[in-house]
Image (cartoon, rainbow, N blue to C red; front, side, top):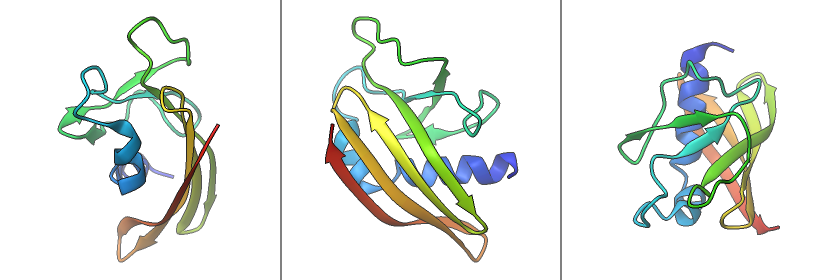
Length: 116
């Protein structure tokens, strides 16, 4: 998968109402979003959320005051459809969903959430 597709997929996920509901962008310290790097999320991506450039971190080590790092995992790419899950430790939730590529754009088609 190319870099532009990855960027659009992650931005589509972060724009979902469920993600925004738990992000609470109005709370001090929640922005910019920090994503934990993995095979899919690499530091060369250029991603924005709520007007801020997303930062990439190596792990979920949560120094005091920095408890808003997010892990995007369980990415299953099947053609033009992707299933994902997000662990958001400060809120104690997992957000799951599906993204579909339609007419060249990635669109969130389903999201659900549950507490850890």
